[in-house]
Image 1 (cartoon, rainbow, N blue to C red):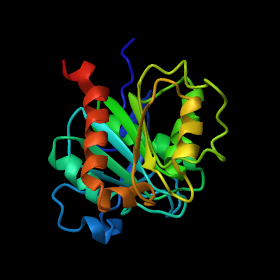
Image 2: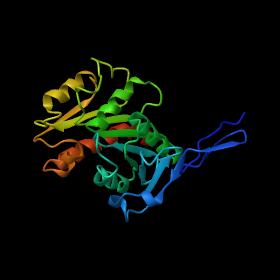
Image 3: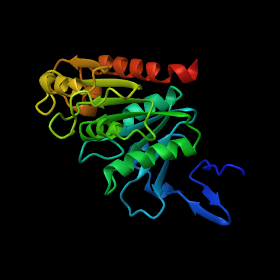
Length: 235
């Protein structure tokens, strides 16, 4: 029996004679922060409300999902998304839908439907917290997770619950962040003993770190994480 395959570009998935469109392109909903960016496209999952907008940039086998803070949107990581797309990554940024875990999963499936072979997750604050927490589900795990200023108090982590995960892990934050300072960041690291921990000076939080005085160091850390994440696929 021929394998049923998910189509690219949010096309249709066929089983017998029934076709279901998983993602719909919505070009009129492209955020202004991506206007003029070649190839940037807005999507929504089939059957969803206006929440849960997904924005794709770039092409290729190396996928990256960017997730924002609790009240953030698809523009929060726009600068990094554009930079990585220009460097050959296939990127999705997102607005949260009603089910935030599902929004992350939808973004991952969208990338894979468009040809990404491996996907890394990068999330700021709540985005990173959710992504790290989702590693307890052993199905459809990403190739790597970068938690940027993840929250120790809301993650539901337990000591060593990341030990079964064999992908790359990065925990990055600032020393005096009121929500995720060095002490809290290292509390998160206790649950993910294989994670690389990067602590930068200052109080900036999540994506703000990359726009601040230590943005170059933050980008260097993120780029190193992505290099390690995709090294097996590239080699």
